[in-house]
Amino acid sequence: SPYISVRNSKLSALITAAPSKAPPPPPPPPPPGEEKKGDTAAEQEEDVKFSINRGFHVFSCCSSDLIYVIWLFFVVAAWNWNVWLIPVRWAFPYQTPENIYLWLLADYTCDFIYIVDMVIFQPRLQFVRGGDIVVRGDNERNVFLILFPMEILYYFTGVNSLLRFPRLLKYMVFFEFNDRMEAVMKKAYIYRVIRTSTYLLYSLHINACLFYWGSDYEGLGSTKWVYDGKGNAYIRCYYFAVKTLITIGGLPDPTTVFEICFQLINYFVGVFAFSIMIGQMRDVVGAATAGENYYRACMDSTVKYMNSYHIPNEVQNRIKTWYDYTWKSQGMLDEQELLVQLPAKMRLDIAVDVNYAIVSKVALFQGCDRQMVFDLLTRLKSVVYLPGDFVCKKGEIGREMYIIKQGEVQVVGGPDLQTVFVTIRAGSVFGEISLLAGGGGNRRTANVKAHGFANLFILDKTDLAEILVHYPESQKLLRKKAKKMLTKDKKPEEKETRKEAVEVIPPRPETPKLFKAALKVTEKAGVTLLLFFLLSILSFPKSSHPSFLLEEVVSKEKNQVSLFFVLTSLLLFSGSSHNLSSPASIPDASALSGPQESGSG
Image (tube, rainbow, N blue to C red):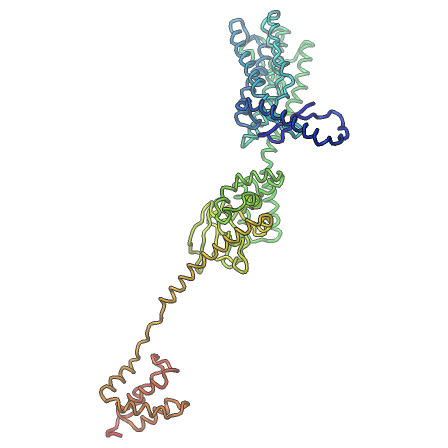
């Protein structure tokens, strides 16, 4: 059968023929001229088909669009009107000459919805068939059968709802709507539970209609088993259907052959229908809790492993906290397990939608090849850090760059690493220079730890190197930027060091008090004796100790003036090797002066 092969849904549509049998051997290639002519004809036909589709572009839609899902809701509502009310109108006496116009108005309104769907929406619907995107809705092969106007027979039979049974053939729209609803809902299992419950209610609905029809066939109130005609007919018959299909029991025994056969069929159908419903409900609940069961299994296995190796309780509690937070925040333990199942193109699309807004803000990657940035997005890894966990420590070798997805991190320091210098919040980046720094320049210069729970994206240095092999221009640009960033970071530090060197000049040392006293005495006694004494010091050998000189002078000069001369000479002689300001280096004046004697030397 012919199908439409679309190479690009926005540019072209090429019509080819799918063989029903095994494909024949390929024909020999045509001459260059004929091949060019054939291609031109195919392109013209392709353009014609495309222009036809573009003529109704305002009505074109995709099967995954929300507008189409909303329209399917109305179509399914029209289909449910026929599915639920055709049996009721056929079995129960609810359709009367007084309200027949209201029933017909509702019927034809549903028919109008069918017509709009088949004429406007379905022909412009895009769907996949055999791996190709089909634009024309030729899957509705029973369009005319569904809308066949059997109402013309009303002229002979009256308004009989059974003549509308062709409208029930549009059942595929119901299953399509279910698929679309499960695709757009965040918790699809809720819809599955509602749908399964609706199946059970509809089976009871059909059984109630059949029971009233059987009671009317036997005669209302003719036996204890049939409906006696009292009260609300539909409610009484529905109650009978519930007790029969669910096999509750407590029903009157059938008396006639018709009643016995009807009841046996009810019991058999009830057992199978109810067991099928229970099985479907179990599958729905199991699918809804499959992720939670996987999380519990992983948690139990980890706890069992830690207990077997006697891991400390503190470490166990942190691991349990990580499991709990990761599951609640992401709904899974490892995002890569989900993404690895997708094709590379879809993984890239997800990465672009999730991470591109953050990575594009990194100054290091601005101006680089756009495709290189896309390749980087697929290499990002999501890691969760617990409160107080160190992301990196000062002095470590930097091999990763960090992008904060959620939470906050703090740059800390001090002797106990409790002083917070700065807080970095979601959307910020740090550690990017370490990706390109080398030769010992890629060590961490600060301690960074998580403040609360933090979810970070990590880009490894090895992954970046593998990507840059294919983008040499971007590699040069990144190296230039990294060098500029490093130079910019170092210049202020060098200027600060120079400024401190100029400011921190050692102050002039204070003149010793003993030297000041000697100067005062010299001013009073004159400088002649002082100069003679200094010349006598120079005549001593350099190895002579100042104490020998001191003893010689003190033995000859017993007055206070000569004592100060000696002390002054001592200070000049030993200033290079003794700390004059230290009390230990100053001789005791009382010891040097000795006992006072009368007379002069």
